[in-house]
Image (cartoon, rainbow over all chains, first blue to last red; front, side):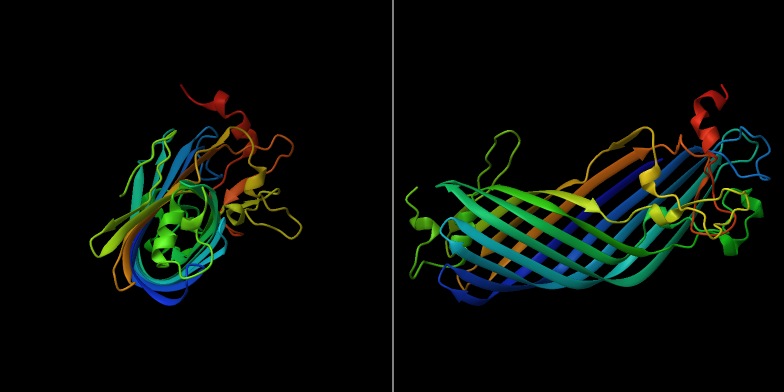
Length: 227
Length: 140
């Protein structure tokens, strides 16, 4: 069994400063459109068919499910930057939004030891959904031109079509296509999706944050560091 | 100045000051786990009636043995923006991730029968003893 998934998400944001305290603390709001594409595919090779459908105990079949999700939406969010000390910057970004989803499904079945032809079914579904994102980061300044930021990220979508969720009982997908009633075709099933994990950013992020908080009006800043 | 720092394939970015504003960018490397799992889609039927009877065990993906590899969960996020003199800014960001997994259905300890789909009938199935001998059963 093979599973394969892709995630691509593009967003354009307008950032508005909401609250700023010198270069130590800043709160920013943002709003903008966001488009996400999720492809999810499953291939199950060489499974046998349950009796009595199987005419030969050695019959083998392949099942492929390929899902494509286009999510067109918009988001609002908040961004927090807090320079706890000259060497450490804490950041938090949260976004929430809604989207309109186009979900395309393709299911194909191929029996390569039997005498039935391969077949495929296609279906699609449109619906609305919600999404949320949270990014936390801690940036450590290692040297004058070197910093590293370690973070944690969550990205959640309420309604997506995933390959493993499309196969339901009673669909009779292991029958001859002519014997499968239209009502038993695999409707597009949707479920939520959650991505979570770590992030790493090496480089010069300190410069960006110092600049975005404006000139230092007091207290140490990253620019004032001796190295 | 937006610059690339090539060190072992790493790309890092900085800030440039243009007339009236400044450009900025950064690139983060991600390791993202996909929570959607197949665990609720596998169940076993020991007595052949294609139903999960009370007391029968479910078959989770953690029971999948055999050849397996994890091809990812890696991704990256890139963002480029422009700070306006007013303090407002605009940005364009991309987040991407690719992952793949291949595994085989087998359980060498028990004669169990995993099937796709939650409890019900006419689910797709795989007889594990056959799977264990799949290499020998293929027709040439």
